[in-house]
Length: 281
View 1 (cartoon, rainbow, N blue to C red):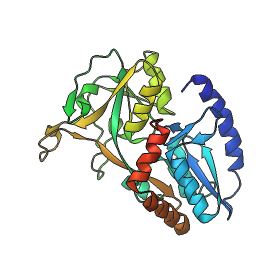
View 2: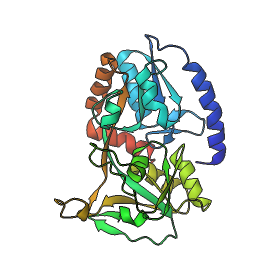
View 3: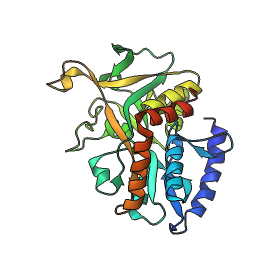
């Protein structure tokens, strides 16, 4: 995404935010999102918010006969915004289900399974491995590097933190000598690679593939745990997470409608939306 678009998008955010200052009404669904996570949400050339999550929520609006209003905010405030219930009814932004987030909001049924990917400069020397047709790197490939992430995403968690009780979120680069810088969105983090400020960026699979497809000079690989990280593992294995839409606790009407739409779409329908917004058809 070109930087000029980012600037124009900021203006659009201000306008949208002004709209969302009113309390949620009976005939509208206010959706908080972060429109820099293609193909799930992104700005098109006319600065309209599009994407898989947008299509899903528009279907929910049709089911409930309500207008759907999307507002772009920073990703790291979406859960708290929805939890408060003051401006937003739900959050749709490729949000991974975690136990910590479940304490604040209700989640829909999961609708997409993702893994973490690492983006590198195209000319970087990287040791890769094969899992069927998936080319991957191990987390230790990132040890000692300058790593960019999108703030408060699971990429940020995987790189930085050690959270007790959440299997998988173990801060893979903790103690490795890697340094992490959080950006407002993944595109800004990748731009920092181009400016020689970062060695790599960790982000979810489809946003990584979308960015590499639409920006010259980059490549990306799946991120795997080494088999030695799990006594029961006989081979390296991926970092797996599930996306869902979050809803203000107690809003059962909206939650049920979202789950109904997701059930109607099924895996095939979701994959068709993903392909559409990736430009594959």
